[in-house]
Length: 248
Image 1 (cartoon, rainbow, N blue to C red):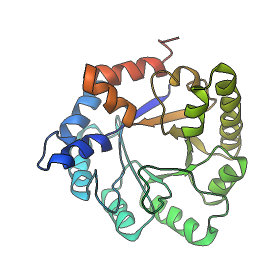
Image 2: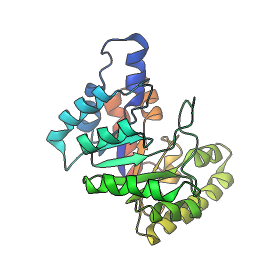
Image 3: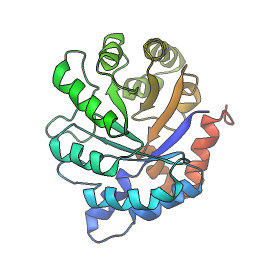
């Protein structure tokens, strides 16, 4: 079964726009878990514009009681303060993503040209601390091969290109999915698990869920956006239903 990790960054974005503690990231995570989410994802950026290190610490505390059933995934670029946080928290998974100066959200995965020796050392260090390591990559065979050479446990396929193709109709979406399927099969061949995320939603997931070897999707923006109108618990259950094939 494909697992759903709910990214609560956007809840923190709303909170930070006003200051204070409302809406509560902890409450959001609790609602998502109670509704059946398999994981919680956070991406504490250097500018702390949404999730903060304090949020990460607090979330780790409340998720400790459901460890083994619900996974905690920390995303971020491998900067020293983030790596120190991951070593201290020891989440189930750390997803390393490239960050470009001034970006609003992730724009691409790690290219295959990323220097190997230093990156491999980071991956090995996190694994030595008991953390599963996933590398955020484009659906390119060379990028998947690079992730395998780094010693990663999984890749997270950057799915914005698929989401864009989906809006152009069935033919474009199917062609894009074939490209992602090739990358997923290469990952499986190289001993890597397959995660995916970025711009997946209730509509395009009905096709993307067919991706071979797909273990987990991480979704935040689309979930929180729909939750504004129908509630977070209902939205999480809707996504779980799609992932289980209950929506054609």
